[in-house]
Length: 233
Image 1 (cartoon, rainbow, N blue to C red):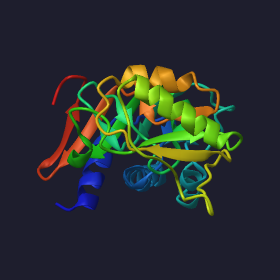
Image 2: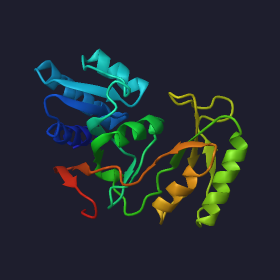
Image 3: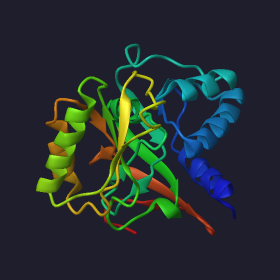
Image 4: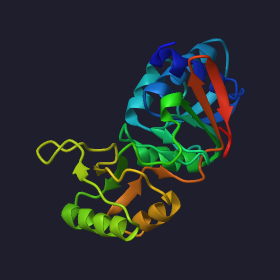
């Protein structure tokens, strides 16, 4: 089973949690896109859902495939969000934001009664941090914000390069018009402490640490998909 097939297996398992009439948060990224394609087939067959997309990219794909969309203002409380992740730890804490949609992903996920993460085995880690941590920041005062992040990380025993995604000449911009700093901290022993510390920096709009947000992870491997709850591997 190749990587795409594993993503499809995870998406298929997640689809079994979607019920008729649901208000659904729809994630961003390659695994989420496999879920969207499968969801569209069910919608064509008569399943009724209203979706809130977590990115403009996701919105375009959903509309192309005939999935009814609403804004989060129209549907401020959701039944379920299904989204991918860049890393998942044993407590179902996540690193997200590799695709640049972390702010909207977190807003949608926390507006939902449940969040199911779909991923392949390569995303499961003992401790978060091998994947670079995306930190969405305001363009104003970029260097001051970067220095504040470095100092905050140092107080927590973390270090490593903090790079502007896309580079200074053509920086990546999020759907909200912000920039992303990718922090190569390596192993993050206390992700909750780092999340709270980053939230206290004025120039930080949001970060890719999703602490206590996911309620279930569906992990696909060579032999199929399995469910993963907190502290169960």
